[in-house]
Length: 162
Length: 70
Image 1: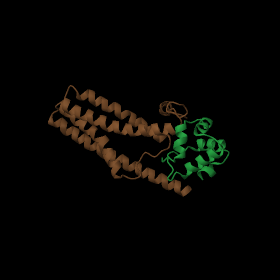
Image 2: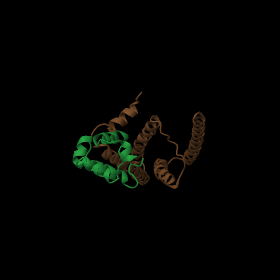
Image 3: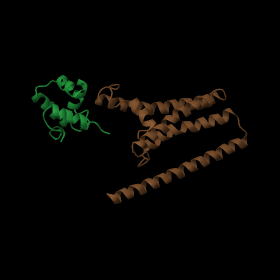
Image 4: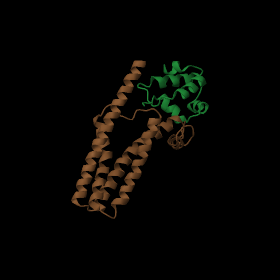
């Protein structure tokens, strides 16, 4: 069954149409689009995060909303990739992956700091936010490790069958 | 995904076969439903076609996929 995300992506990608030309031209557009998206993600998130930091209270909420708007399509992309049975967990964390991950994740941290600064929360609230962030990171690590283990056991099972 | 062939020999085989059949790049492009530029990139080894397109090319050039890309 085709999901709504797959239908949406299929409509945008127009694999059987002529929106991007023939198959060779389409591949090049997809390649360029992919690189553009990475560059835009890094450039826009950093500009927005720094603007939120500098702009203070009037700017921070709206700019944070922009960051969230940028993040939601990324979640859709991961959902789409998983639906197409492509592994989303990296097999290895090379230098390039670490650099790209940091470049795309850090702006969200900067934006969170900008929000805290903009609303000049009390030191207790700041402490609460710091503890919350630490717990969030810990939870993310636990979930990631669990997913890696699940993936590995699935691969072992598949290898046994083959 | 890597679309290019490493040494361009596949592209050379397509070019030779096309010439043997007396077709221009434009003729071949029209028959297989792609742009001339795509035929150019295939013949220079800059683009490896999908299985579906490779089959169309092989049929159009009266040969097999293996003979062109094997």
